[in-house]
Length: 542
Image (cartoon, rainbow, N blue to C red):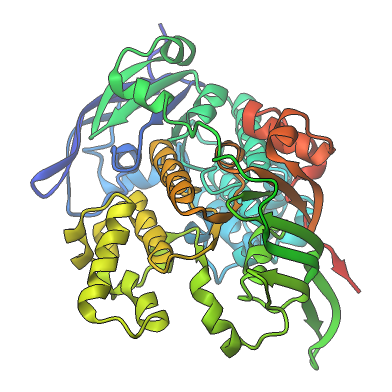
């Protein structure tokens, strides 16, 4: 039998008295893909970071990490530097945080080549172009001078992959590399990784909480929870007959069920006609407008009371911009009627009385919740603005009721956002919106950064609140599995326009447009997506 490329034995990692992992053991053979699966806090990323000794100094590590027979736990710094980037490379979860915002693509990839290969400017530039072309960046020469913020999410992740593969490593560690990506881009990245793996013959440790990805990319899987591996084995038999209760829990955790039935005779809560949001493109010393990015371009839609409208499409398709425009958080042209009020012509000040009835839950609860405010102040802030007549005692009672409605204990209201998990923070964000008893709520990717079991819980929570209150939702997401469980009606957007709309069940059963079929294939089958859907750029109109 071939000796393992990487062998981890009895790995225990502790921060203070509490261990983050306990007695972790697994092997990776040359050319093999092993998936490390589990929910947030299970110890996946800590295990991956320990391989390259990237943990903070406060971490206490015991056990062995043998790479080609060399124990990396005991290796001196100079030996580790020889391994990092050369023999073992890593792709991190969030490329925007991992890439240097003040350096160009060429400089960041060239730095890897200069340090590890000793390549000078001309040779490094040539190799950088080869790498960008290999990872599917269109017109790579034009991207050399680009900064990370000038690239789409998929393109940034491709740059990270190019950097990781620059020295053709024997082992690639991919830590949730597709979590925040659209389904089509996700499918492209997975296909790309498998193609590059086959070409280079490298092994891969793939860390994820998405079991659909594991089915597509892995040879073997290790299931982690609470810092321990509870089940391991080849992917197909493990998924077919899971032995551990936690594995069965993960497999059953995908959002299920159907949205509450809507009334086709109910009045429209939202009516939008010919809505446009165009951002000017300014160039030159005088900053003259030379064109426009059509983020939303002539959209018509209607949402009835008690109904959920799902809005799907890739990043840059205009989904979130559409939601913000309807709530008058962005300037726009066209006709917007919400709850019988023509809001398009209202000033920002005139919009304030309507805000209580039209709320929003943002994608990232950690970014949208103030770290300086306790939960009771975060949730009670809207009441202080929209219901100033109520006293402190009644306001506190409403905060408690809102927390209990989203499944959080009343005593948690005195804590701060950083003291909660991602799922709990999203529940707080939902409570902040619901405490005002709105009639229309925009849900902007509210489950995209959550584990599958937490996703299912949040979907059930939102459906339950909708049914009890008769709420109307606009549910924006790139996760079609979640949308299928939430939406009565569906619109599919691309480049600011609606390419398909109608009853959600009909579109999921028989999509009519090629673009919708590509989205469905990527979401449910993880099929290879046609090349023309690679990171579509929004149109610029002169």
